[in-house]
Image (tube, rainbow, N blue to C red; front, side, top):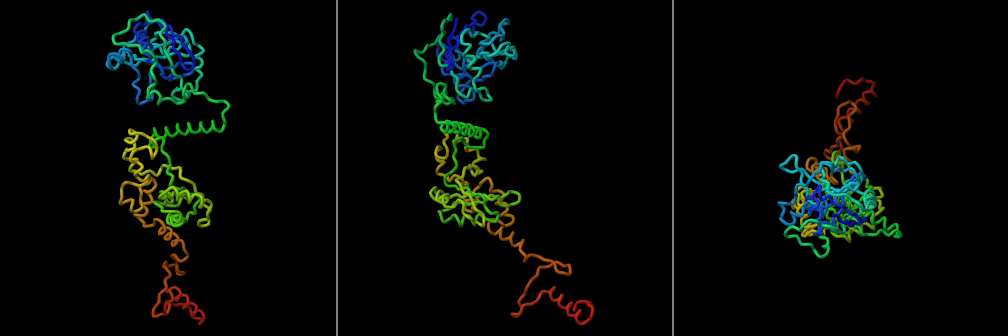
Length: 457
C-alpha cells in the first residue's frame, strides 16, 4: 500500500505500514483520496531533523484550525482527532520515516491524539520523536526531494522563504473500504482564498537570472519593507502594515535652536494654509531638538514649500526640508482606544483603505476644544503642553523670557555687596540717580576734601 506525494520540489513515494498502524494508515489514505492535502504548505523545516505538513492552510493563519482527521471531515468537529497507534518496534531510526504529529490528550495524561498533520524525518537516529510522533510509513523513493527540502532557506520558525507545497497526493493502492459519506472529487480543487493568502513567494514563481539587478534589488527591498512593516504591526508600533505617511506634512531639520514654532509658521504660511506647526523639544529641558513638522491644509502647498524652502537660511542656519516619513504623530486617543483593532477587522489598506477614516484629519484629536487650542494630542505634545500650562513659556513668549534672563540688563549686585536691580525713575522730568551711584559720588567728594568717610549723608 503506497501513496505518491507530488511536491513543488519533487516526488515522494511513501509505503504504509498497515499491519503496525492500521488506524493512521486509513486516515492518511482517505485524506489523500479526498484531495485534502492538495496545496498544503510544508513548514517546520529543521535541517537534518524533520519537516512537517498536513495542515491545508498552515500555522500562523487565523483561518487555520490545525487540520482534521477524515472522520472529523465526515462526522463533524467532535471526531476531529483520533487516538493513533504507537508500535513498540517502530523507531525514528532512518531518514524518510513518516509519522503522525500528535498532541497530549486533554483528559488522559498518558494518551495522545492525532489529526491530519504528519512529519517526515530528514536525519537518522532521531529518538527524540519516539513516543511523540506515531510512525505509519516510510519514504522508499524521492530521497533527492528530501535533500532539496533539507537545504531550503527558511525563517526562524522553519517556514521556507519560497513556498514548498504539496501539489497532488495519488493513492496507488488502498486496502480499506470507504467510510459512509466519503466522496472522491473528480479533479483537484482550486486553492481557497485562505490558502492563497499564506503565499509568500509562489512555489512556481521563476526568478529571472537575466533580470535588471536594480529591479531585482527593488523587489527585494519592497518585500523586506513589507515584512518589517508586518512585524511592527504585530508588536503594536503600527496600526496596520500598509499605513503610509501623509502627503501634506513637511519635515524640517537643521534648525537654529532659537527658532520657534511661530517663526516657522509665519515663514511657511506664504505657501498655503497651515494646520499645525510644531518644533520638537526635549521633554525634560524644553530645549529645541532642531527639527519640526509642518502640516499644510493640502498637498499642493506642501509640495511648493518643499521645492522652495530646501537650503534656505533661517536664523543664520541653512535648513533642510523633506516630506515626512513618520507616522508617530497619530493621536494618542486612537492608540489607546484600541479602535485600530476594529478597523483591522474591517480591512486594511492605509488611510484610504478603511471606510470613514479619510473623513477624519489624519493627526487631529477628536477632542475639539483641545484642537482649537492648538494641541492635537500628538505623542510629543504632553511635555510642551505641561510647560505652557505651568510656566506660560511656550512659543515666542518662552524664548523672549529666556533671552531676557540672559541679557546684561538683568539682576546685578552693587559694589557694597547688597543685591538689587538697577532702576531708573523720572520725577518731574528730571532723571534720578540710583542710590548706589549717589553713594559712590559722595565718597569721591569726601576724599577730595581730605576727610574720611564717616557714614551716610
